[in-house]
Image (cartoon, rainbow, N blue to C red; front, side, top):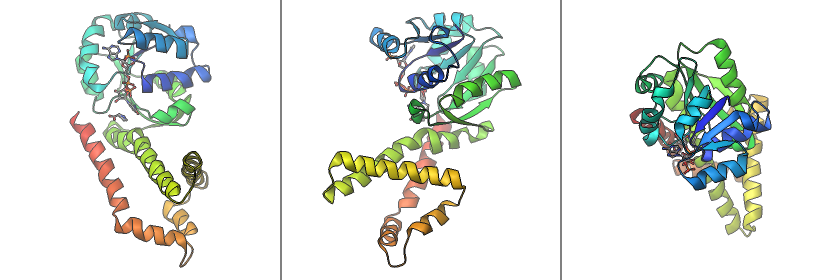
Length: 264
Ligand SMILES: NC(=O)C1=CN([C@@H]2O[C@H](COP(=O)(O)OP(=O)(O)OC[C@H]3O[C@@H](n4cnc5c(N)ncnc54)[C@H](OP(=O)(O)O)[C@@H]3O)[C@@H](O)[C@H]2O)C=CC1
Ligand SMILES: O=C(O)[C@@H]1CCC=N1
């Protein structure tokens, strides 16, 4: 086995989905551990990878070990596995607030350490991942990490000081985007549109807007202005959003998420 996941819930399974789809690793090269038998069965049935309930088995069988448990379990899990870690291992944290230095300190030995902040759109190959590494990680190691993260979307290598910003702007933001889509769909339902259709319209509008911005490279303000006809319908909505503090609410939410990450 070449890559291991300790924990295989929402994020772990999304990452493995991309890795398998793009052939970065074969099923028999991936080992995952779950906490429960039910979780282990789910990983086996859904992904067809090698499964175990023993976290140490993951470390014994894989050089790249991704810690895909919730942040509050990081310390406990590292305590279990640290005696099986070697200088050949790359330990990969994906939790907010768990810094390269913290991970290395808890592992109690000099190690190759990677921090990733992926997001759930990885499930459909449209993820965005921020990555940073410590100085033991070689160019070749980083290429291997990027092959993994690029298999489920795009990746940017950033200085570690930006990881809390990454966490807010792409790790957490899918939740806020889904709230926005839900709210837009509710409004369309209020106007008489069937709910299922309302989700299609709202989601496709968000997808298309993101694609337009990424593909044209235009400023979001300019793209917004292209939609707003003088004395038209859109600018009326813009006025109401501004009156209700839309931008400020988004700003505060991301600031809060980033600040929370710094405290974790
Ligand atoms: N969800 C997201 O959008 C994002 C999450 N992250 C980070 O990813 C990490 C995982 O989050 P997420 O996938 O959402 O969480 P989930 O709750 O979906 O999955 C957690 C997984 O950890 C397993 N687990 C719990 N305790 C242990 C243990 N002691 N040993 C082995 N496995 C254990 C669970 O097993 P079982 O299946 O048996 O219950 C489960 O598979 C977190 O650190 C989070 O901050 C990062 C970016 C985005
Ligand atoms: O809510 C969280 O803490 C995790 C990290 C980014 C997305 N989910």
